[in-house]
Length: 326
Image (tube, rainbow, N blue to C red; front, side):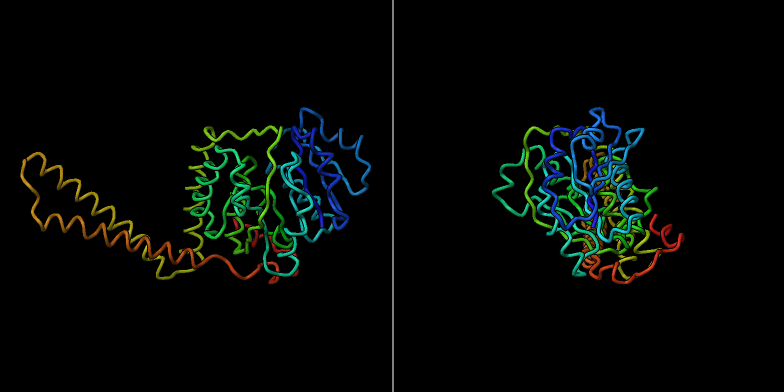
């Protein structure tokens, strides 16, 4: 098992994080993402743990780029499970066994932290983070297809090596959208993802994530991934009743809303009430359209992957198979 620690402005905490990583971890990869504080050099000079390897980026690639560099190094070294822990002290390294357990016993391909299990701990969470996570979680459910998950931006994760090899590294988002984009890519592979309860500590660490600046870009990326996922799962790989329900529902909803708007506009201009037949002609397609869309959502919720992917593969995937996940 290998642990990947992206390192950017975490000089105050990274040594303490490293000291808490248990003996069950075989290798630790500290990725200095062109850190202005030279955290990679700081670790090399002050950490005597022989398991630690420092990797450096000549240019800042974001948390996603740092994690993928660590993943590639861990895969090259033959690690079977890859854990990602932030170096800012918010994630307790002593929880690593909890994250790898579902993978080791074959219940999951990927695990991620969820800070919302303990209601008492949630009260201590900054209000801005609570609101941001609620919005991001709903958007992530739509775009990723993992309706049973919460806290999508949580960066405490673990993944089986056989699944990591099948990820399209070149396509994954490099910035703060990395964790959410990872869920979308995992769904295209039909990987099983499980939430792991955890608590986070909020002290003097500095976060570069500004909610106001990411809402617009995140919304666009979520809509893009939602469109791709629906196309891949319901039209490219398979056709089902849900493949008909969604477009028919959207078409009827659009027709009913458009016709109703025109009828209402004409009624206002003529100062005469719309005939009951006109009202029904607008209302009925809207009601049926909503029902069809809800039926599609119900089918989508029931289609969350349940069979672990890594138990189905024992060898390296061919190049074309990885391209299918793009």
